[in-house]
Amino acid sequence: MMWKYSIVVEGTGIHVKSDEKPMIGFYANRKLWTSSAEAAIDKAKALILEDWMHGGYRDANTGSAPMLRVESITPVSLVWLLLTPSQKSGYVFYPDTDS
Image (tube, rainbow, N blue to C red; front, side, top):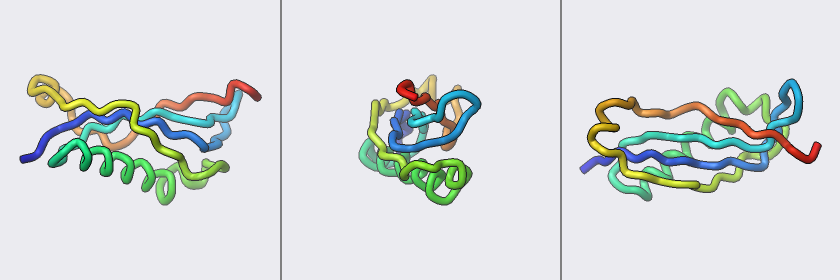
């Protein structure tokens, strides 16, 4: 049986230039259909790493590959399931506060 999960992942160790301070980390929320919570975590991390290693952020990142940590994982309710699409991209970045 497939379940839908919302997984919030934090990524650190990156370095992306911005107009003001460099971005050194991000949060990403992935909403995915999988067979278990463990599979959802693995799939979310794989999608994020693919984006950073081979996708759109590869050239922008002058730091290391992101180190990923799961902030939360939540099974999605039926109402939320019907109202929200799967989410497989997008980031909220945070800056280096020391520079």
